[in-house]
Image 1 (cartoon, rainbow, N blue to C red):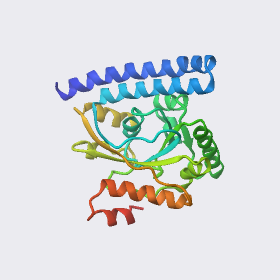
Image 2: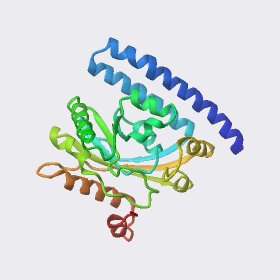
Image 3: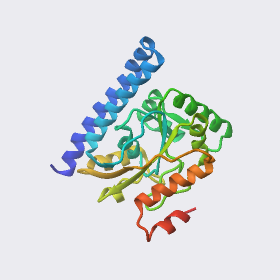
Length: 262
């Protein structure tokens, strides 16, 4: 199949997927919430979200090699952040809620789906909103939910990992929930093409991803970090260290761990 034909075919599938997403988010989700208990509604909506993300993954032809397993029960899963594809790669494998930047609200279709799907949005630089975000995370953890967060606060090209914002770790301490790091790495052609950084816009980047035959991703689900007796800054550093050591070679590790572009 030629690149142009592949792109045309996948664009049609994505349009259909987005239309289905709008129906799920705008019609089915409200019906579920109106007819089910809070707990049951959350479970049903999460299953629909997972199914939708799996369809998205199949259209993009994501080839994900997974190592490790996710802990049972309430947990905050923290990952390095390279692209919006990270959300699909991780989210299709577990019912969860995402913590994301409010920039996504401006993305066509995706912004609406994220809101209706229960994404928690962070407004950078707004301390009051950071507290509100923490309260929402605490509530979800008390409901035995899983939360996926990207503590770098932005994306990188994957060649380094920025320092983690520690505020996202506080809800786990308050609820005594697990913290589990996830190390993501794009391989092959995807290593150069997948990063969503700088002035990239969602639609052009999506089209580039659709034009690719397949995208290879390594996802290492690392051991749970013990929180007993630790402060959030320690947990943030420990999580980042573990992710760096899982991705980078020994010779690269000290450099990557200590420096990052300003």
